[in-house]
Image (cartoon, rainbow, N blue to C red):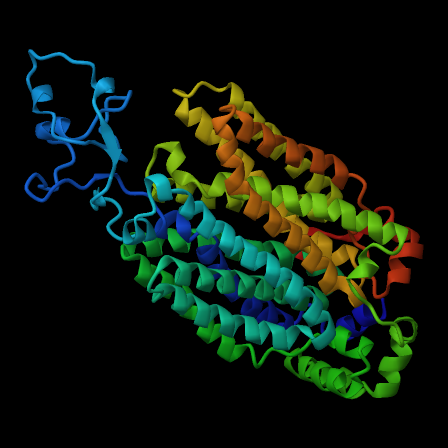
Length: 544
């Protein structure tokens, strides 16, 4: 409570906080580009076996191809097989034979690609089709593995060394590794750089959200979280524009990475979390940053009143609780209330990410232009997050988190019973489910930051994003279960969010409740277990 009162005295949601949120939100625009980049850089063009040079004319539909490429059951030429020797008899309409008896082979001489829609992707760069098709999903899983490792590493390091230095480093690493992926000479090198890109993304996300939450007054947290979420939404549309204008995958990779060098440069201006500095005993630096905030907000008189003694007095209880205590990730499960929070948060993050990437990373399955589908998937986030803001502000975080997960699961489950030829209905249900999951993500970042106390907040955020990345890693692999039962992927994608939505009902409500400073605050304070009695005082003008 004490630090919140200090923020209010220094201007509350003043000029500094507005600039602060804007600068920390700008990198989020391009994070969507990296998360969903492989929808375009790894789009699968139409392809078939390359034939002997004397027969090859680059034709994909020519009549003469029937002598070289077998037809599939749908009447289209096979993408991965060819006849061992030309079957010119098949060109004679009067000649009938059982083509299943003819010998075929894999594409021994490579592949021919139709570049009319996707002229340059990693697929035709390294022939990631047919018996190498799983390399496409593997590349995305390796990227998500990097995000997982980054959430573990950066989550713990930022609690120990601060949010600011890890934020600066993550921006630089994102720039360097992104450019490295663009110039990768082979598939292995590409995956290594994508892994590093994923790790740096976690550092940016974790530290940006913590710096926002720890500098913003309680009543504005829902609004700033939603506004930052809209940056990610807009970033999805920016990605479509970039992909449409830049056909070469290497140039597209560069375009998504160069802005992070700019973010790296201005990150040096963003101050460290004064809340973290005070609890870490770095009072002088905390006072210096707080006076800077007071000056920008036009509250210089209040800033001049700050001294080491006043800070210690105002935050005495929190400082005493944190002094001499060494915190680690084990503190996330040591005490009963925090342990329950950690379990439910893990379920929430895993299922949200698992179902989200299951829907969002395979746009070609909808049978429409991936540019159109990506625009639809990105646009649906706008009303979803707008509605989520009001639900978070007036009904609570817990209600929104549980409802979004359960509704998303139901929407995915319904598609099992929708016939394949009703593609518009199937796409609509997927879009609705994706919107619910986007709102769930939006709530999860804010809710997790509010549930954990300052001393282990980054570790808690790291835990949440870590299991989220596990969900992102597993999601592509679940598609392979369709080989055993066609609807099994949808069943799995739907049941996980439904069960996690039920688990979210056991989380404490945080609406209108000040951020906890210590583990004792979470364990002993009754207002962590019910909606604050002051929630009705939060009005529309306070948040938007």
